[in-house]
Amino acid sequence: MKQNYFLIAVFAILMISCKSKIDNETYSEFQKKGNETATLAQSVLLANVGQAIQKGGAEYAVEFCNLKASAIVDSLNHANNCLISRVSAKNRNPGNNLNTETDKILWAIFESGTLNDTVIHESKTLIYYKTIKTSLPACLKCHGFPGSDIDSTTTVKLKTLYPDDLATGYKLNDFRGLWKIEFKVD
Image (cartoon, rainbow, N blue to C red; front, side, top):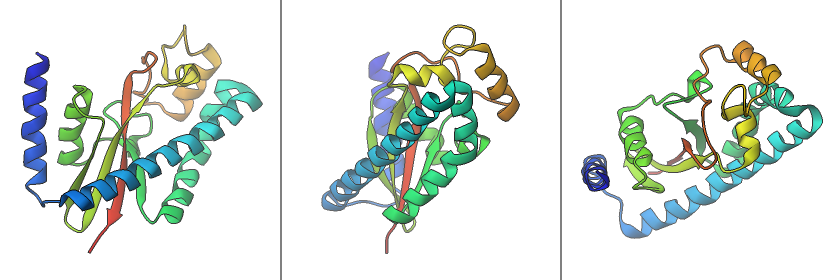
């Protein structure tokens, strides 16, 4: 079964890469730059969410994310001259849905566990994708299982702010989403 996923992944990557080839040097450069940007974005968001949890618990952190996460990412966009987003098939924010065919194909590849990150070239944009996992126990306070990991007040806050929330039911280290970082190139 794992071999089938691998073959699907190779085929999909070949299909995507046919859009426009990337030379090895450019690929390595933007893989490194994308990874650094994703790591920075992840650490800044986690630090802010951690502070919000300390200040008012998980319920407060949900409200904080609803109001502030986009602004934090926007400031990182400007500082890093790119467009940072998160995409998922199980999104909390509807704006983080898998919107493009490339997003959907890559989601399937990443979900199979055969890839951790990649760079693709579409039009005049190099796009870096990297997995997001529920890597800390604190993640489960908002992304775990309602009733066991997620307390009742946080569940109510999630349903209020995100009525169509799909981003729960995760265990520690589960694949939850993708960083999608777009760099304009000539």
